[in-house]
Image (cartoon, rainbow, N blue to C red; front, top):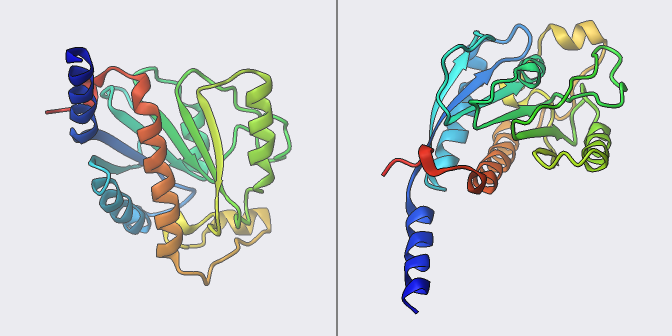
Length: 216
């Protein structure tokens, strides 16, 4: 009975203790930092509702030397590919939106990116006009076949490629000769959808770590 009470108290303590993370955003091609302010603000507010506090930095630096073990690296579009290629075991996790490992070589503009041991979440919106949502099922099957349990791949409903940068179009669409979808849809609805997916993922993988990133 005493051991059960102790376990219950421990669970309640860890559940209610705030989580603190450095959250670094690597931007898409030719995107300005201010294009990501809306995403950053919505993610920060939604995280607080789950007792997660994010120190968010929008960075142009694709080569991080000194990072803390509580660092989450997030990459969007081109920044996502940079993120997937960045292998630093100190990272808590990597999260990308609008990018893929291209394990089956279906995306002709990109080589296959080998998967590492860092817990990684790959998200593609089902309204993405740049990266097909079909990559989600491809990567899920690849991960299952190769028993890559640290790799999570998912889609988000009714979100496009550019919502992360506030639907600001750039040179990528022109270069590829394609246009994103849902550009007239409420961007804040899409950002809330993506943000909540990110937060749920953070909460789902924290149990695999020591509680160094929990500050009481």
